[in-house]
Image (cartoon, rainbow, N blue to C red):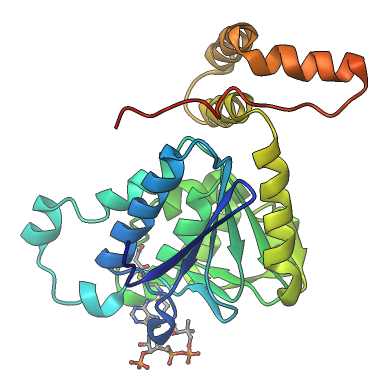
Length: 264
Ligand code: CAA
């Protein structure tokens, strides 16, 4: 695969996608969104991959959707093409996806990080939804996912004033899980991803699916969903292996996903 806007690496069960448009601070143009999805497609189909990581450069995770590409688009063009709908596919992934954010995560860049399952960031990270300054509004889920992540008042203030949040505040508000010195961010993120990749892929994917349910359905329905897939995990060999390994006092070897072949 010849990538123009990303780099893709795989190591120890982890797929690492690095945004690679340095001249535009990784602004999300159409090609970049297409390539992120192509890379995620490959990683999701690969039974040896248990976790995926999305990162940028030290200066910018991504400085937003590509303003130069959007400037002259007409309403019929963006409406008929359902502009940004391709980006939604990034949030619909079933394997875990971690964002490692260094530098700017603004506009679409912040929204891209919010589409990931959780965010680790560097101490130089800056988060913001500055679309209001461009005469528009966030269009890749920012008004929804930022509000769910940090609450109404803070999301409202950030989206209305275009203020940027630093790493410390991002950690305090729960937008990010942890802050690392910039030079440690990627290694720490890959370490967490490798830990996830060692687990049962079935269990990991069920956990992701079940947590995401909490945002969509009532508590009663969410609990019912969790209980039913909890029951179903007893049909998976990894449940026997995980519990047997505990009883035998040895590390578990999860393999049920390894022999799985995709049809597509
Ligand atoms: N789109 C297109 N190009 C961008 C870009 C973007 N979002 N952000 C930066 N670039 C380009 C710059 O135009 C510049 O290119 P040239 O060298 O050809 O002039 C290059 O990247 C470097 O940027 P700067 O010279 O501006 O770098 P800086 O260090 O002075 O400033 C910055 C960094 C504060 C992040 C500044 O680049 C900036 O404000 N960027 C735009 C941030 C923004 O408004 N993002 C929201 C976009 S709209 C959106 O995302 C809609 C949505 O909801 C999806």
